Image 1 (cartoon, rainbow, N blue to C red):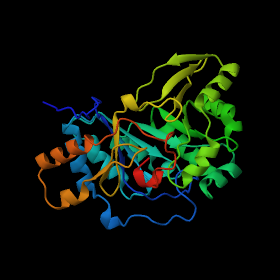
Image 2 (cartoon, helix red, strand yellow):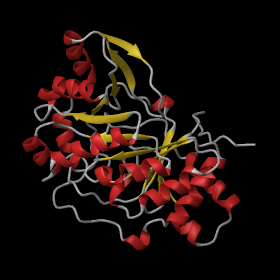
Image 3 (cartoon, helix red, strand yellow):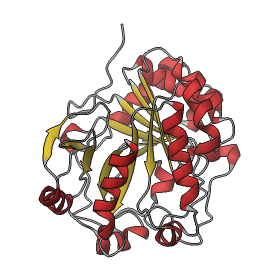
Image 4 (spheres, helix red, strand yellow):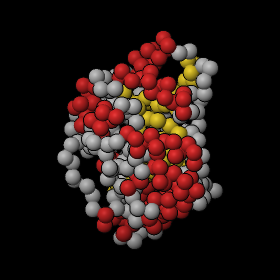
Length: 328
């Protein structure tokens, strides 16, 4: 009988975001500061065997959804091999991927064949010059090619995640809606979060998504909608289209009371909350030779550390780590 992993506030932890690398081929301003080079050493990364073991244990504890993240997960060599192994594990019902899509054109088909069914792509602008500025030199053409390749490979849905930033890309909200209608993508807006040094800019650029919703409601007829997935987005549908728009509001309308997820970094550190410092190292324990039962006990101890809520609003400068280090 499958167990259920539950924290001390009664929340069932059924969703794990798994970082397979802390490296990325872009330098998005809100994720990784310019000039950042403090990456982990590959010897400290969890191996595929170690990752498979941890995910198998999480599956036995009732975790059903796994999302591969980074950094940029596609820079980890042989990712389709890992995905194939994870997709076969008992209890894992949903294997998805978050990517910047710059390398997705070549890997879309192998990833689909490996068992990944859904893809989220970070895309904050449709303007080549602005994309280059936000990402530290990236080429938007690679992302568009990757998105089209994912669609042609049969991924459904393909979701675009757009971090709404005042004075940066807020003039492109309607353009992104039309782009997603045209290509049958799902669109999700995300509030900028104040994490580490990059968070100082996030505070300046923050837009409550109620503002974006109200703006769109003046141009489109929006109807409440549901959509499959393990995340916290609240969805609407644009009438007379198939477009679903999700709003992820960690700041203005936080969803801590229903949070069902934890994050495992590439070095084997389990992070219990994106907005708190609570963590639990698993790599050293596994390499010391603990049994599966002992690993389960440590995972439950870690889950017991999961805080009731984040403190982005109360203490916006509290965290010093970056999004790329935590895992998407």
